[in-house]
Image (cartoon, rainbow over all chains, first blue to last red; front, side, top):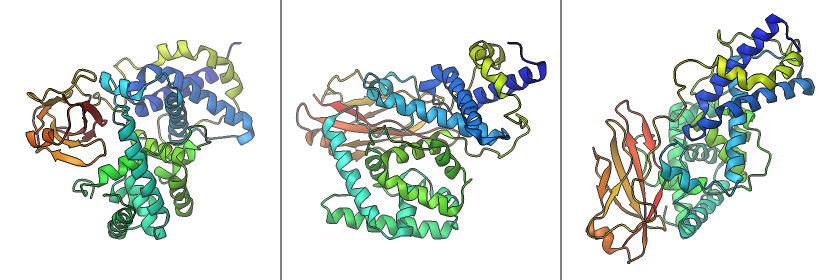
Length: 180
Length: 211
């Protein structure tokens, strides 16, 4: 099948843009697979088109969004595979994996983290809503200004809610027998 | 609060992140990407944040969106130009089979810069070898011009000691800490690095047996 020149050129531009969007977001430890991920992302674009979403304008934001989804799918798929030990990857030093709160596969440490994590989740679930939202985002790794931006608050309000929410959380954890 | 955050925050973050989903759940990573990028309504963002506590898979996807996505992605951009999809994607579907070849032709000449470079901090200790009590030096892969802080914890994640700022990628565990660890016991340690450009990088948590 021979594509018309204009379409061929547009396809090449889309493929190149998708490749750039994947590379821009791809962690170094996954870089060897960036090409495959970019192709998977292109397939997503086509699948969504076939799904009847109609005449879509492929903005830079949309391309980054699809590239990101393909990357997340691949990362989650690899984490499910037992033959890829996370601790082995981090010890080899050739990748910049997002921080994984694992202690080299030490079962006791993992269990301690999970027990504390479950207590944090339970305490936050019972917390006042705005404090819960603020602290949940803060513990996801966001800064106070980022938390404010995402929730549409001013920085001072976000700071107060994070501060008070953390104080509540510490008190709740102490009540459950955990030292924060 | 990001730079002078309370001491326990890193531990609480790690603990919350340790809650694993089954990895099988459906997670709309695109919608989470939208929320982190501020593309949804406030009410929709709040609803997604509420979901994070109940759905560890969604929480993981949110962390990935925060860590991987560019800080800002323009809604529209001069490069690439906008396209309409339906007019030409049928042809593109056939061309995708040759995308691998196209990649080789179209890729930019310089080495691609992947997010996350330079490489992450990794332990430079022999894998699972006990740390000798006579020379209890933790070592890790360094960054050019990097400065480091090290936190040493018990396997139960109680903090045993924290270093001052270090200019070399090594740290000697104190005798006081060693006395608290029984022979054959383990310590957990983690490095936070500051690059000359001001970027912060946090290592994985390493678990090391003590002689």
